[in-house]
Image 1 (tube, rainbow, N blue to C red):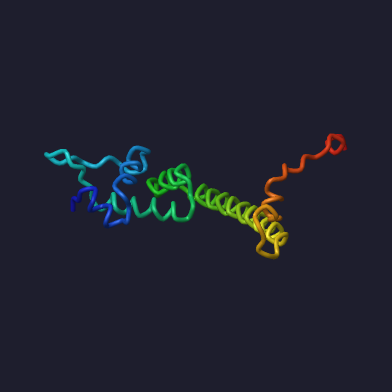
Image 2: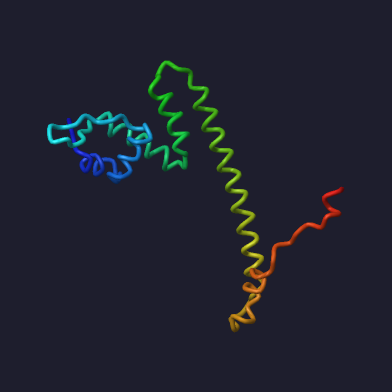
Length: 143
């Protein structure tokens, strides 16, 4: 079954520009061309695009997707590298969560400085945001 880029996009929920981008990056193999020079995709393109989109929905980078596709394309290869990649990705997510928790705490602390509606000139949040960041003194570096 051959389909044009718009049909592939509808089938996979992917914009044609994104499909062309994935082709440029080598994540999707180039499609055959019709006599009128239209790109013609088949079910293997759709399956691969679903795989790519699932990886991207899990927050994986294009480099990570390429690594997983390499494993996918070599089914006899041991999958230890897949496990390592997913473990690293989980570690990155854990770091992002910790950073977001810290960010939320900072914002909550900032929000606690203003308990009423007052003129912007008296807003404690704006005052705190206008202060330069704290710079450690030179003595703390020598310890």
